[in-house]
Image (cartoon, rainbow, N blue to C red; front, side, top):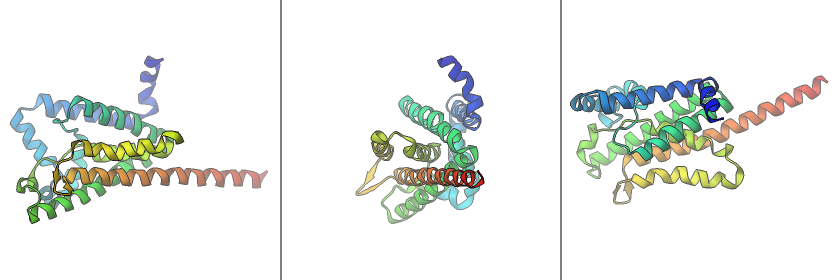
Length: 223
């Protein structure tokens, strides 16, 4: 059964499967194939830090979510790549379609990055964050993927639904750095992405319900 499930996975989730291949290839390139100095240069080039967002926002917004962070542990990779992409993104693709899933992912990543970068710029200028964060590392798939995890909340069975949502929102704080009462900007971005994904998930469910109600009304009216 597991073999047949895996064999059918690319056909049932073509966009998610393609994205999984891209992410795994990017992880291999950054973590294993490129020399350390070259890999570091590429990480800086695709980072959505305040400097890059001020000069090449479109490039980094599109490139950053193609590469999983190489400094994450294997547990994080299982949760983010395996769970967030392999399970949650695939579920959204099957339920609402590839286009809706892609839109939620890209918009969530963009909104979360804009909020996080704005917070980082303000905190660096005020001296709350380290100055090197202005053009430091900040790349990865986690903003968009956390939005995917939050977006499946309305699809989780009701007794577990809010435990799931609480887990999604709590996850970023497990690795947060604090500067007084302010967490690091990546945590701010993750919380923004989760909030956007949760709202998007309920929007998609309600849109689907309205369509079904409309179709049912149309069918009863024509009979």
